[in-house]
Length: 298
Ligand SMILES: CCOC(=O)Cn1cc(-c2ncnc(N)c2C#N)cn1
Image (cartoon, rainbow, N blue to C red; front, side):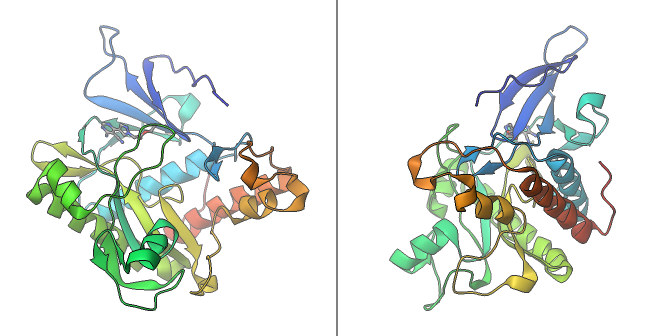
């Protein structure tokens, strides 16, 4: 479903991803500024590689506020790209003015638990991204320590491809590869030090870095349910796929007879019923309130 992006007076639309949109503020001369961007999180939700027709009210606000909370808590580890939250009223709470950086061409993924593509790779090679793992691990196993499992930045509509660490070195050099590897792992470690005590396991996460001169700067979003697998800690049970903290209601309904949808058909999923939308909204709000200890205000 191709949507016309929101028109924001004073901003030029730059790019739309599945669930977020990028704008450039216009300078006094009316031309897009080259030093800043406006990152807007929509209420769009994706499932099974489709952007669903039904928005989840406040999802973009919750995830933006969660990201801002994490940027603050990670500031001792790594500087971030946030310039201001003084944004147009039309996107209040769901947009951030950021410093435009020279983005590194790597999806920096760290995994603290084994599942998804990493599990598949482990099952066929005993390793993930060239990192040998202990025998006997199963779906949902906690890894001895988080591992760096980078991917390429795939073109729109395609899947990111896992790349070996040597590929990152080839792309950005040995020094920078080691810096982003260590930062990505430490960000996930810090995330789980905070989240697990509050009932949320961060199984893995994807972060993006940009350069400010020689400094590595944390960009994009950080440790949100869109960039990370959120699992309810009290239901963690290795040996089968874990329930998703935020996506399970949608997945369960879409794969139930009630939806009339066949995942294998390749057809777009149907619109979600109101109760599934509200339950999903409530899970995003719950995750925010558990992590931050603050009451969510739309
Ligand atoms: C539609 C959403 O797409 C993205 O956020 C991915 N992306 C990020 C940038 C970026 N570019 C320069 N400086 C930055 N600070 C950022 C950031 N964040 C470009 N695409």
